[in-house]
Length: 347
Image 1 (tube, rainbow, N blue to C red):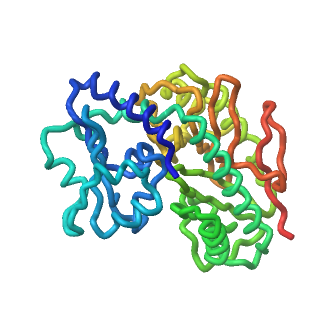
Image 2 (cartoon, rainbow, N blue to C red; image 1 turned 135 degrees about the horizontal axis):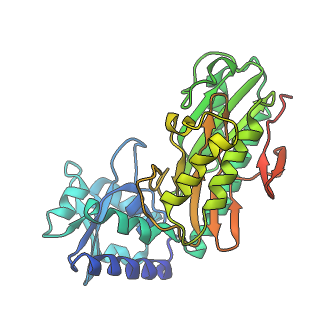
């Protein structure tokens, strides 16, 4: 159940966003904004579809615009009791975002996108604890699925084990990627009927309570560049601390490719990740963003090279980097004082 006290803090944060933008009402229409503000409410039916709710935030309070055919479920199972007092049921043929915007002059999300990212960057204590539980469960799914694999297992069978494990724990499988030995050159390997072979990569992005955990694991033989890609990740982590700029952390990590012995331009061949939370990347770092890194800010850096990749979801605090997607059953190495995942041998 959402937290009334957390809602008050989020109302305070959005009041500041609105004041800085002139004081007009603000309409929240994206999955990341609506789910964050409503404390993890499931905003989808189809994973590929638009949100089934929108929120208009103004001086008089919040008004929720909800698809009429979804309203009873949300009221009964997910919303705060007080939300039903300011809930507008929207006919199924009208997008809730359109109905909320049509209610009068208001700020649209794109007009204050950077300010909204900053408002949700610092996770509240209850959010951080939900994230820890999600991270542990996501990592456990990777371990459980990997333990069933052999070199003869097909990529699709591996993906099925991953997706099934996520759903069984109440986690939406937003991304499930699998690459066997013959397809390791692909950075986003959608699974095929091919076998895993002696070395394979598993990637998942799973969402629960609106929060998204991102993680990559390797099974089978160790890779020749496993240690070097962790060197690059360490440079990203070292530069990611409260008060630093996202562009600064991005530049430091990208510069580490050459220092680690990779082509210095390797960072240009795939995205490097960035902040996460209620979006898979919030935003995807490119070096052009000047967002400030906050205390209790979730990140998932994603350094990679052909046949090498490392990725975990972490919480950045003044005390350092806390890895959330961790399972004690998975083999690890210690690098730069941090425990990082190694390749898990086939059974």
